[in-house]
Length: 346
Ligand SMILES: [Zn+2]
Image 1: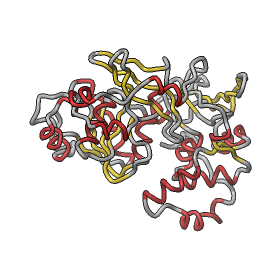
Image 2: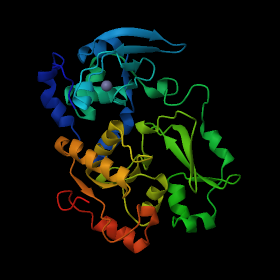
Image 3: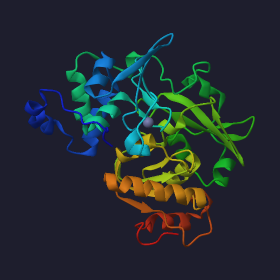
């Protein structure tokens, strides 16, 4: 997505362009190596960086440990068809995270640079570095994705145990797969514990507690729509998008690579961007019910033009509504026979 207003590159951009090309990633592995090294840079002078992206600051909101810079949302027009009249968009001075309350456009500052200037992540990093001193999120406080009143740390997970064998068998997931994704068990409530982590740093934001016909996100208000459940360090050819985190564990158990969960049928722009940066094509495996199918078609219509090839998980051979309810054979065949959207819309 581009900002509605045109943005010009920094003045030295043209001279640097050939060098930039040389530094571009040659393979996804190089890319993720570089990204791991870069983490999440935030410009030292955030208001100046925003102005350089063509985003006018309208207000500043002082908080105890940071400042929120308010502006009109640069993505509003392309996401909703309307311009942002109020300043719905804010960038946090401490974390560099941006968020539009109205359309949900959100992510780390480097994403704003990528979207605004049409850069890849490495070019965006270089652009931020050229503006002067920058910090990475490691230097700053916790991200505001979690309510300040309830701070979750890795130690919070010590309350839970690895899932018992019987529970694993019931959900047809292997203990190794649970371990791979850090899935745990609440022995008191006999519920699954599915950690929710920062997609860039892996920092723990909270978890989803899940039982039969029960689920609870902790802490309340956790912004799970800014991340995915899955192996967040994975990148590869083909990713699979599922609704339920436990189905990601099931897919891994079956040997299906690159499965991620959006924590439900609603898939945010930020989640789609996280997926797009990790794969060359995407299999949409949202549930085979009306919410899942509607969301699937919407994602396809919105993201196919942005250069993400997609297939749909095959459901014609089964009455199951998701991968977790299928037998091993049916699940593997649903994945193996994923089809192009134009072939069948049901
Ligand atoms: Zn917006």
